[in-house]
Length: 138
View 1 (cartoon, helix red, strand yellow):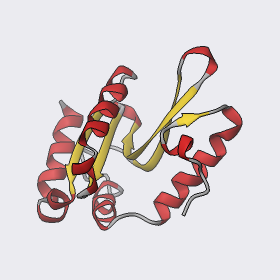
View 2 (cartoon, one colour):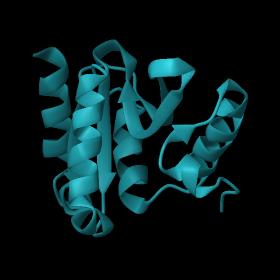
View 3 (cartoon, one colour):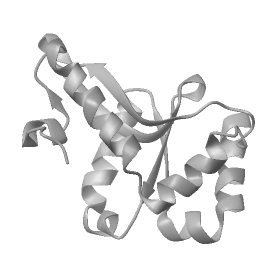
């Protein structure tokens, strides 16, 4: 899959010259989506969530103190609303604390995060799109 080191996966971006590696990693993720991501993207790309534009596997870079940059790769991102949408399978049950902490950090950076599990996407896609749409118009 990726040649990125562990420090990249954790979101530590050593300097601006390495941003291209993150972008390449995002491209790999876009080329290898999960089935749930594929299904949700099919709806979001048609702007079925209130007509809003979403990007997938989008890298969000944020300046931290002392010239450091951190990043987070959003499954889906709507820049207009600074809305991040995450789709998670069973692995997310094992890393709930990590995901919760990342959501707090994203909130500190001014982003909102919506999370859906695979079952919701597979079995209730209309409800998922409706929740996203209502969030965008609220």
